[in-house]
Image (cartoon, rainbow, N blue to C red; front, side):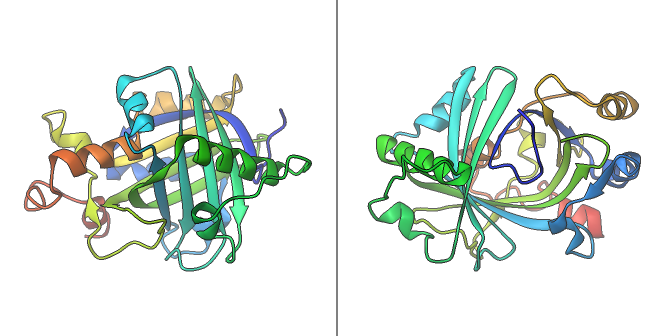
Length: 273
């Protein structure tokens, strides 16, 4: 399948790495000959933009359990908005993982559709050949089948790149990870958002400062040579990191404040101090 930057459906590898803040600029420089910043990163001075994701699940947290159990075939559902989340576009996304591959189905919503499309009876458009409409229908059918409800709202800052030498390849760097429990179809973060960045530190019993999520994304079976060079040059070790799972575990086992001082060092402070 041919991929484009704005494809509604993407079938790809998503290779994740936990890296220290000190790697952010060197990695950005390393990939500069092969990539350019995406339109959202270009709109900010430091090239990090805000991403808000509302994760949805069954009443019994079936999607979260599948991730915790490490099922090879699983999916999750989320709504997403950028910036302060007060204006469109809004996105509905289903991400299905099968083995090493991830397939993402994305539909775009306008101002009048969010959040009513999830709180009212949705209408299906079986006859539509439009990929966005098909993905919207898929999301609404799954939402009805699983009786999904809001669980947790996450926010982070992202620097994102697209390849200029490959048909499709993407690099993202995520910092300043926060969450809040959410019971409504709401994408606007509140003042109660709490950091969970060093979930990757204290759950492993070590303070290695690896609080940045680096993700390399490319078509299945088509890893660019420059990505392989990047992995080897920085000696990166691939490991999974789920924002939904880690923020949920933090909310269950850490009230978010008992570690704030001095143990919980946020990348925002590390990066801009």
